[in-house]
Image (cartoon, rainbow, N blue to C red; front, side):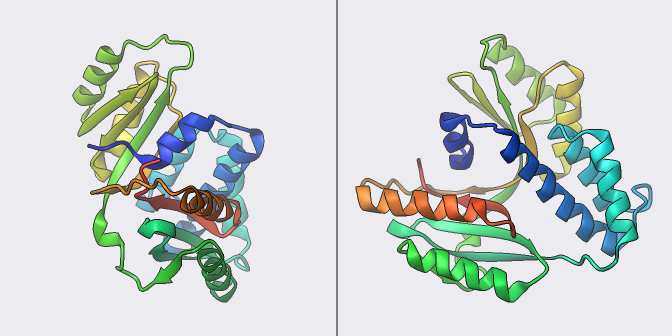
Length: 241
């Protein structure tokens, strides 16, 4: 399986700032809000919320934060997010999927359309690029101190139920079927591995190589703008960067 371009980009920059972590918490909180509205605040009766709590823990969200999020969205019914996915093409024909959680779909759609247009891309209809991607679970582990035995990690991951594994320069991507993501994550955590992130991902079937400097600049600006937008939850693309 080809490298996950989003993770490759993250691992090269390796900028895990407090602000970025706070945004991860916010994004998971929005997902919880949607799940609570749909199925209630009790994770024993709400499978989606139960999975999100496991996801939050896998992404190092403190238990106090998780409880506070659940209480907030259980008590305040004025906060109402809807999840909307947008698709389009960036510069050089790179396929882009943008997942959002928004309380104002007109604002979100207008902002995204502006970003794509400004940076030499265009938004398309639903389904225009998603057929190029497959939904998987993705667990990411960083070994900055060179303490992990790659062969042992691969063996442990596959024994835990992972579908695929790849490693490069101390950064590891472990792919699972979506239903196995939580169990594989918990198994690896139980073995002492520190999980960088654990989440569903849209994995492209093919990647686009971009060599033109202007196209590269436009793609970087588009992805940066999308990442900075508070309504955007996840961005997936097939740029081989």
